[in-house]
Length: 311
Image 1 (cartoon, rainbow, N blue to C red):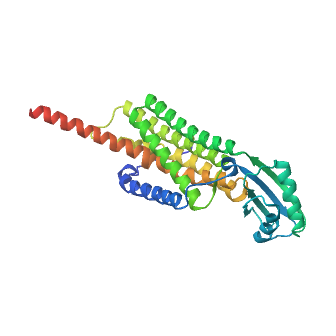
Image 2: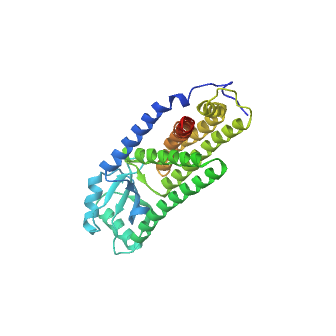
Image 3: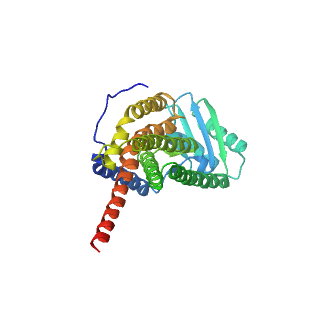
């Protein structure tokens, strides 16, 4: 195994209180953005409607496209530039017409609007019931995943570790959703896939640190080494592995984000943010919570023993 650090001894756990402030600040910023904007911007997969992707030979303005579409009375449309200035995404509200009829009406309206030659590259139609079902399934999927993560880590390590890992995952998800809101990006099925990927990535990182802690505690623990010291040792001993894995994933996500095209941009953005927060949360959320929880339990036990001894 490649070792980036020779016997690292950084005091990660000792700085956990400052990390708590950072985590709370970023989470609150994201939640504030979500509340201020009335929640996430959902893709057509979750809202229902018709999506048309059009590429023009000559770049028109949004006003010209909207004026052309107003003649077919399909409702208020959302028009966004997609990639370069000649390509647009048009989102239309649900209509009684079929997707084929909507396509014909959009084509005739754009042709009659004097916008020059164009090509319809994509047409998607999602019914309202499908959109609602997908929203519910996305919530259930994440909740079931969190429950199983708690059970698995609780059985493999202990309940404290399972709860702390789930809190770390919730932290990562909230930061990613907040970043989506701040950057005005849409929540789509690829974004959901990216979130689930980040959940798995974050938990895997946490399990590696927990595993090393368990190995170390199974050996002879030097006298005077507190639980916080032991956790810090475990984090330092897995540091090279964590950095190598994180950098590999980070650079892959960066390539997709900056060079993968508009279709993959939101997916790559969530991976890009999630890799950073997932690596951070392994130490400064999951490990830190386990340390403080253990200190609290040990402190209560000591106080109970003292009370019994005095009695």
